[in-house]
Length: 553
Image 1 (cartoon, rainbow, N blue to C red):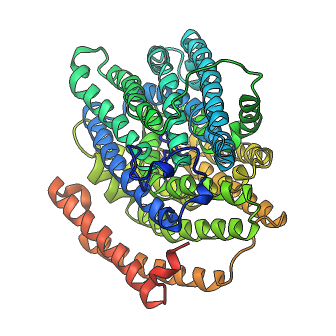
Image 2: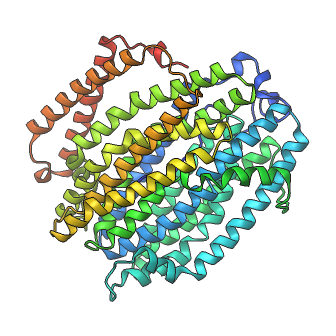
Image 3: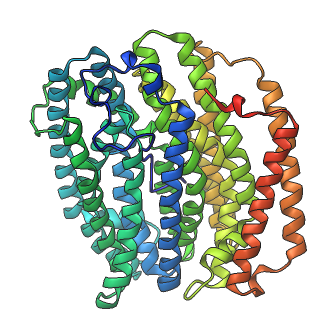
């Protein structure tokens, strides 16, 4: 159950005019840059992470306002369905599948230094992508009632959630057009090592939804319709932010439509097998959405809020490292540098575990304090907070695996191998469906109020299986050769995690019942516990011998 907000691009330079035009134009291949102009992956990841952190803060404000104004009722569940379906398509035609196929081909053309071929590639790919998403959006608008029924398959016949979801789908489907053009621009900027502006774009997404809730909700019936209009406005704003940056790089597309164009055929050929593989978490979320309609009306909302919380570490670290490492791996592959390729991948995996493991552990240990502190206001009840906490605890099982998958998928896509991840994704979805049926059905039959947590647990376990399968295949093919010192690295992480857990659990139990505190006290204690846990983790790593030089690529 991964995020609606999928890989967004960020980093070390803004896409505005650069001090050295040669470093920003297609005529200057990356491998000819002086060392001083090369941006290290750690620095790029840090910039991406900083921008994503701002986006997540805005996202929290959006979720807090949504929970306060609307709670977790049927209308919010209808929006969850109307948001997740075009959001899944966004991962296919915008960020995940498209970017995974587009960036390696674009990087190869940049390495050749042929500006004319690069511009022709941008023109035709943009034209083909626009044509496809316009057709799909139109079909989605027309078929909205049937799509809503499909994803609310088990909802009661008299439920108002289905027609409301269909109404919202007619508004959110056109969002796919604008966000696809945004993703095209973002992927191109990432290839030119301009990560900051694309990483900033999701902030506009959250701000647009906040503005829609504040300005439109009072005039609409039901007021939750404002969320759908906010999604559409967000897509438009993000496109308007990134599109001019392509002009400053001299590669703004002119939209030529020819599906027989060589570049278009290469991208779509690489892209088709990634439909499952790069968005397997979203597929599993949609499967979970269907099963959640069996449960109480608020189940989909509870899963949505828990999913939003797991997006914080996934976006800050997993997506950041995966986005930054893809162009780097693509360059190593284009230059036939197998040793550099394996070392870059090894660095990415170590960084994901270094950051992802404590994030997952912290979310699991602080599930209830987090949900109470973040959402227990207005229409969002104590019961809602507890149910979100159950789902969040279950979902944390898979957070490190979700993050590892982002890096492992980049390893396959950089070599233009999209079929192998597709095989892993198909197996993952099958396992997810089986696990949901096995875990949720008996819980539902027994009437357990936390049956929705079974959906979260199934998705997390299936995601772990996906990451393990991808890693195994990379090792089997000899593509990835682990660098020395992995055993010592994992031992140090384990010791630091143990110390962190002791500190966090000790403080949590000492503080007591979070639900009876005032909001300001909740926040103060939450920040204190998070800070103490992070400090314990970092200090233990230092005492165990981890130094800043170990984090550099």
